[in-house]
Each structure stands twice: as structure tokens, then as C-alpha cells.
Length: 151
Image (tube, rainbow, N blue to C red; front, side, top):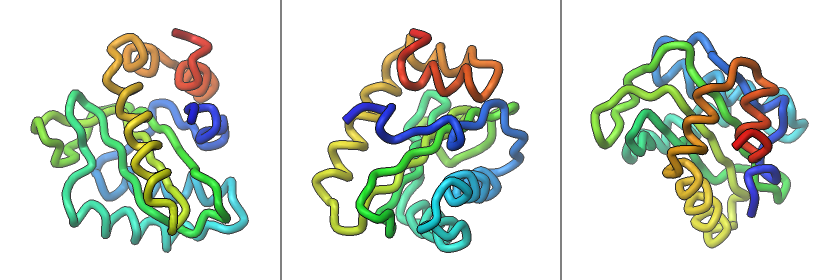
């Protein structure tokens, strides 16, 4: 699975003005729902919140990967957001987060969920990839960096 299969430019937001983890999750839910007929932003936001109660999805190094299983009409869906100012995300390393990559997988896709998370985590552990995301100045730049056209 490639990032390009998860992401669209409409689900990419560069330098979002966000003051809290809750607000970031709300913005991501809205970003995803706006591009989909089948996804309700409020329901998705509640799923993100429920998942965060199980443990933070802040993986460290300023990165978070909020994720959940959701009614996605069979597709794995992603959204990427960089933040204008880092926020507290209860990350494992205690560092604030400035890159948030959300992912939804179909409700019954447990194996796909794990594979997609592993692929995403692998990319986000690559310093060149992360630097390219952080250098992006526009939504389009961020999208290009994410799908690899700028690395």
C-alpha cells in the first residue's frame, strides 16, 4: 500500500491553526468527511476521541497517527495535516506534535489496518520524508511531499 492510495490533495492541510489535540482531531474528521459522502464528521470525531482514550497515537518526534476502524465503504482513507504551531498530543516522548496523519480502515479489515499503520509508521520514521513534510508551504506542496514527488 502506498500513501498515494490513502491521500488526496483535498485531505491535505498545511500549517493548520490548531490549539489542542481535540481541535486537531475535529479538524481531521471534518477534512475527511468533506471529501466523502459516506463519512459523518461528528461520528468520526467521536471515534478518534474513543481511540485516543485507549492510548495516545502520538508516536514521538513531533508526529501523531490518529487511526480507527470506520464505515469507509471498503476503502482505507487518510488525511494529513501539518500544524502552524506544535501542540501537546500526550506523545510517548512527551514532545509536542506538528505532523498529524490520520487513517481510517474498513471496520472488518484488521490485517489491512495493521499493514497500513506499519507502512505509514515506516514512512514517518524516515527523516528525509518528515523533513519534506515540514518544509511544505502549501497544501499542494504537502501532498506532493507525502506521495513522494518532493523527496
